[in-house]
Image 1: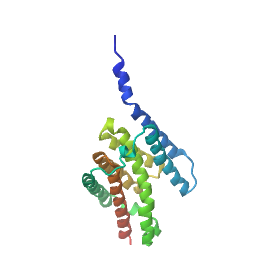
Image 2: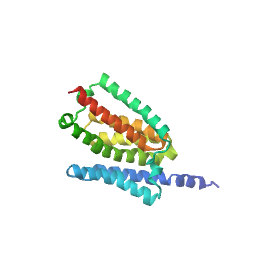
Image 3: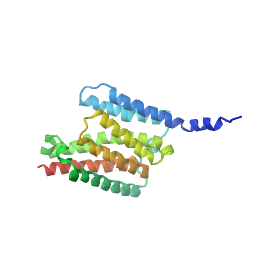
Image 4: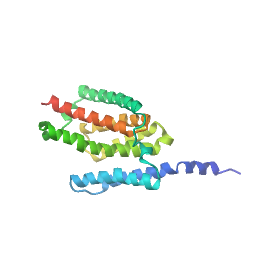
Length: 220
């Protein structure tokens, strides 16, 4: 008689990944289809569905710490080395877009940022920093660490594909999306290697501030 226990054990081993994947899909569907009106409601939607709900799931359902999902600063020297290496990879990639494609002329920044240094700093260090942290927490934290045990390095690619598909499906396809897509892959590798998304977040923030400052500089 055939023994069915191995199949049952196999399914049980995937229980957490299956449930967590369901939570990810629910959060993304709510993010896409939940109606909003205005910038504040849009921000509140991102905060609720990409940060608060995953945090409640991690703390209340999984009963784990956020440090288990990358919110930590373990191995700082190792983390900074990987962040630096992937920052270089990101810069090389964006340089290719500058030199061989029409990226510079199609990456638009609001005029008020170019004309006011303090508004530029506020935008980069507050608005961009907060939105980027929420995104990194959800994709390179929640998604990646929900899958890392079973998928290993592929979990970094999967979370990047999730983000890429989302921005492509919900935004007008243009060069403005390129940095986000690049950082989703390089940041995912940093997080996978260091087991912390904080280094990926810092790398991404430095990259975006440098890119925006350079765009303003070359068009002044």
